[in-house]
Length: 515
Image (spheres, rainbow, N blue to C red):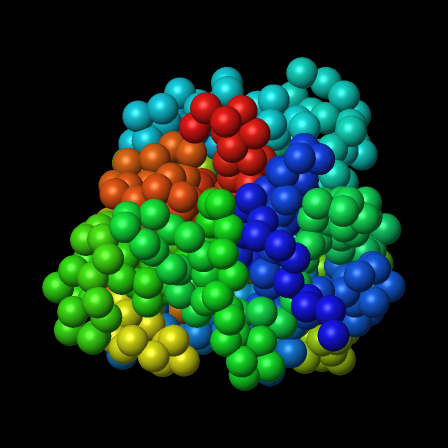
């Protein structure tokens, strides 16, 4: 019987998601480099092999409890607020189950990351050619800001849906500036959402980078159903990964290991390998390989609440995407322009969680988040058993400034719904009430009872403290991290586009063989 495992590869990539698919595809462009990818979830070999609902851009599979393409991890958003953090477990990772929001980070993010990494590689100037190279912008084509030959198609959503048009008119009525290209670096305001969905079809990174031809290369192998359990380190060098497939474990050795398992799984995998805060790992019964306190010490994400409004008449079914308009505002006294986000859904929450595009008599939502760069919470491993999940703490809204920003975001959303323009389609907010909106304590309480997260986790293996600018893990050789774990803080926009950029940048560094 032929073994499913190729000979010892040059690079073993753990995870075929937003970063891993891009990294593997780029590395395998060099015919003399053998690349093996192990993915915990299934790996369809053609776009038609994906369940149709995973590619329907009007749906958000990650919002559906129990979806087989999603893994959830127990977490706490704040003391006393349990949560289930959803991540994609399929080719394409979370880009297969998320909302298809594909917005670049802001220049301020790149400046911050470059300073923290101590490396100009992460400046906006250096990153822009890679941002252009990873996309085919179907609205702008080739320009100094946009590319027309990359794997990821990018198209801005249509604002002709009556609810989206009303949102646009309401933003104009309130004097918010237009922001038609969210992937430029213009002052923040209202505009359509750039999305990696075309004609109602989500194009995840697995389809874009791997199924577009890379999987036909003889030097690239992608194995589904292989969950990484730990990294094998000998004399300070990572030499392989323990994987589990159908209940059986094997050690796959490689010249270099790159972890692309995501900002919650990657730090846990490092901990299980003895790489992390020594005292905590010892308490969990894990032998210490490398004392690296920054691994899992904190995380960066964006707290979110949902505000629902009642349509005056049955809303039209969305045709191309669940996404409508997108408004970015700046919090008072903040240093980061556009750190408050109001994202419109054209599908009711009851539809997002059940996989339906319309629900009779259901209200429609705004997803309201604070995207100020913050590091809180953390990922702490409590057992040497890989089946015991880590303790994930988001640590949201513990600071008065964070609570103030969230109040501002909620009130700004309520102001949108109170305009004459939005009144053409809406009979008002479901909640909070005017009395609650006017009282800080009541509004804080309302927010807390409805608190969620944007699922934008970053910063659990941060550049500067745990890895260098090229993802190399401090204190070891042969081991890198290339996913949103390495971003010290989450960007001012959702990180899907930045996750792909990470794969591109780390692959470029590895191909140059200079870092």
